[in-house]
Image (cartoon, rainbow, N blue to C red; front, side):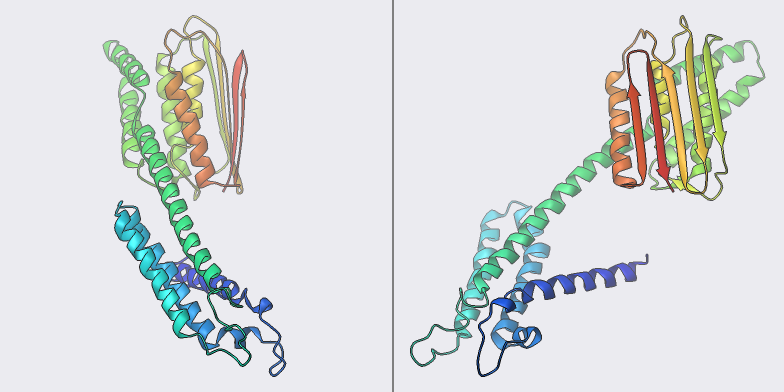
Length: 336
């Protein structure tokens, strides 16, 4: 959707909400024998109602766009209180000046503050709504910034444990003058380059993400013994498809963190299926004894990935995690 279209849609939505809100007092207006029931449009364009409507709209956007962000959130509370007082005085003055004179018999004025148009109640609702909406958006902004900071940190880092083991494996290959050493260096370089260059992108090609995973698994194989069985499958065509970066790799990293011990038999299964409608990844590993613990990093990585999935693919993903005594299984399906 283009920016112009979004702006037009926003204006239309705001206009509809204001029309509905400002029309709410109409059903409660009195039946006037000389004119019959007051029509909605006719009622809205009466000078007192129209003047109040314009003032309410101005007050809402003033508080939402100016007073809250520039005064309240900057802790200029006295000035913010003054702005509230000024708005209320303008509201009171407008309604006082536009009160028609008393009818014969001393009947109450039709447009008093608590009269048939519920002016005071509507003023309070408008002010409270703009205040609450600003607070909610500020809370969401802070929450998203904290999540973005956490995500950026996780996306740009390569596990030191993995990096040191990989370098040691490459060093061993270099000592034996293995032909695999140059290829391993290229894969590690590609892995680090992708971590740095794509970490700031909202979306990347699925092919790049799959290549990153393949390089990661190949480098893990360099340090593993024959006791570690790795079964990696990738099915389907990935051309032309996109995904948010680093959504799949945390679960694969977790499998290697908790499923690898050179003194035990380990079995890691990774399967990625891609079709026209979704991406399905299944990861399974048996749990082994570990000489080191990295529970905090693992928990942060997986919990952050869950938050990202909820934020980026709301209602478009299914994540199922089975964590028991002997093994750990993950099934992630993302609709594309």
